[in-house]
Image (cartoon, rainbow, N blue to C red; front, side, top):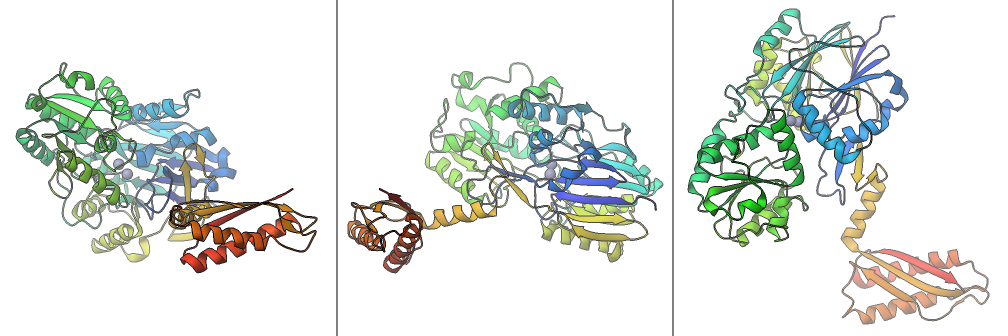
Length: 548
Ligand SMILES: [Zn+2]
Ligand SMILES: [Zn+2]
């Protein structure tokens, strides 16, 4: 029996974020990317989400390598967690490697990771796979798509891409390589679906230059541009325009500063000498000669912009005449947080530009016409939409049908479904591929149950009640104590709480010898029932019956 090629998406299919893909042949596994996803607004207290790689646990010896397409968080963010469990070599381009190292230094400073640097155009042999990374345009330099030759055929993984003819770094997508792949025959194309609901072509990053020029020309004072710390191309554009308009630039936020320093050292970010100043220096310059690039476009409470909005930044204050520009897309679910920050910035006297008010952001992902072009260029036998919510994947499947791929050769699947490629494309069983929540230092310890509890606590609050109990006599000893949080405003609710104490005393008056545990259940039930009758709300009731 010959080995079959299997592709199993572990993240990024059915959601935007936490991309991770497993490509398998025989006893060889090649992984592509290991990203994070930001939590939705109902995932309380979750910092971020990483892919569920449970499926790989008993195949650790088969994992040959993990290859990274580019340095965005949704492609590298989970690496510190992944490398803590899997000791495998990482392959990345120079800038991506730099971003990974900044991240690893912060998360696991002691353990050196095995990172191999590759350049677009290289040929990398890993087990039965021959990988040919090719340059793509995206909103970060040094991103690639991958041609992966396997014993049964050529796979092309698009990475995140757009067809930008005037990219910030002057380096367009490697069309020649795509044509070459096509000449050899592409078995399967895995392509970025993020913007499959956008008609036409995604505008070039170059259109932002005009927008930034306009903002900086009209701004009466400081300009604060917020963007992702990993959007190196955007940082470059802001620096370019600022330099042309005679403004000095300061970077606010530790990740922003670390990334920029690294990208500058590697030559991916060009900042003329004398343009970059510190936040302290910028305070002594005339306001209209300054630009600050900061983190916090998603309203993250600890990022620079949110701290500015509430007046809690160490050295900066928002004031009249400031202009704040949100130069990034809104990750779905973050709208409320972002709008709150925008409103506060307005309150403090700033003028605020944000999507969709002005063209201060363009997407880094291909729209429909570019997606069609990629399919036409490669003429794949099979097509698998990747990177997107189910609606994006479905739409991308439709686009593939429109340009002539037969429906039976298109697999629209979500995380965890194993695809096998032979004469036909088969969709197999589903492996685990859910959410793994990261909350502070805890990984995976919190699941749906904890989420549900947090939701209940958040909605109705809690009531703890303590009572001493004499088992021999089957009766309470002394007055109970009730504490509430998030349930009722206590001043004004004294009557209710006194009645609640009576309910508890009654519930703890039982047959002599009754164990404390039974009394606890009785107290809990009686109190819950009483509070519901009185308030029509269902707080979490936590009883404590102490035997004396
Ligand atoms: Zn990306
Ligand atoms: Zn991405």
